[in-house]
Every structure is written in C-alpha cells, then in structure tokens.
Image (cartoon, rainbow, N blue to C red; front, side, top):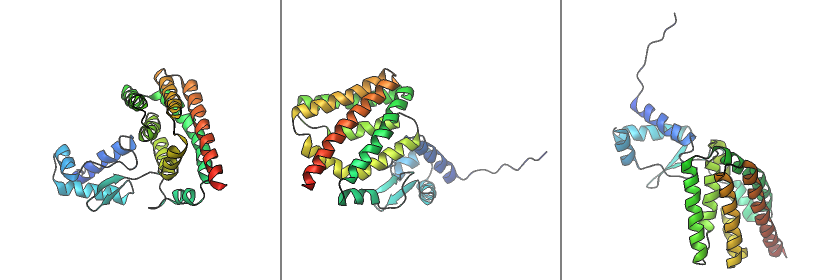
Length: 239
C-alpha cells in the first residue's frame, strides 16, 4: 500500500479554494467586486489576515486584482494584459467595431442556444427582471442602455460555461465606449426602443420555452439589426 500522510490545509488555502470555485462557477463575472475583507471574514468565520492571505493567493494566480481603497475585482480569464488593446483599436478605428459585432453574432447565437438548454429558474428570473425593467422604461419613454448590456451578460451566464461568460464580458468591455456612442446616436425614437425591447423579449421567451433554435434565431436577428445600425453610424462618421 502507498498511503500518504494527511496534511491539514491552511485556513487561507481553504478560503482561496472556495472563492476560486465561486468564480469558476460563474457566480462572479469579470469586473465584479468581491465582498469586502470584513464581510468575507464574517462569512467564513475567520480572521481578516486569513482572508487577506487568501486574496493574495488568488491575485498571484491572476483570478482577481486588488486596488488600494477600491476592493478586490474579478479579472477576466481571457485577459492578456492590464490594458485592453482591442478597446483602443476600436477607439482609433471605429469600423473595427463592426468586426467585433460580426464575432458577437457567432458567439451570442450559441450563448442563446446553450442558455435555452441550460438556464436554471434563477437565470430565467434575472432575465425576466431585466425585461420588466425594459418594459417600464419603454412606458416612461426612457432608454434601457444598461439593461440591454446586462441582459446579454446574464444570457451568457445562463450557459453555465465560464469561458462563454468571460469571453462575452471581455468583448463588452472592449465595445463599451463605442456601444454607448451608437446607442445615443441611432436609437433615438420611441419606436427604436420598442424594436429593441421586442428583440430582447423574443430571445428571453425562447430561452424560457427551452427552444434553442428559436433563441439562436432571435439573437441573430437582433444582432443583425444592431450591426446594420452600427454600420450606418460608422459610414456616416467617415463621410
């Protein structure tokens, strides 16, 4: 027999393992803040130095980044540096954003498909809350720019595939400035906002109905529409 001695794990190692498991399960998306040290210490029933050591371990492995006075933030699994060269490229050459939208059509058609297959009741509840918020904004004739972006991330989260979630979040981070500009330039009327609401609602209803094909088709239809509006905006800016 080749038994090995049992070695007790350090408290900080156990804390780090639990937080790592939560991140890899998609409970925290890239950019999300972890609870403060004091709250984590209370949750785990340990001292703050043990929590601090665990966070240092996670930071060393690249899963999180700590900021002085700004807490600890979950990093993207697909980050290659502290800066975002894709975001800078889109800022300098806006037509490159259309390349990203083309990639999004491919990716998000499948996140919608897998979300329809795998979404749990909590995932559906989050989507329906966003749709309700969009409907409320529509009635008040207010835009739903932030809710729009959040819904796409929640759909990616509903795949329960951590790579989908982190890839999507990275693309959205890179596109953030461009998307905000386009939203405020081309989605100006109540009818525009109604079209976007109908698109998103169709995706969510297909996911809720567990119909992967309908979910994928609804997402492609929506992103093709967004691509057309974005392309018109870029062409106008280049004239």
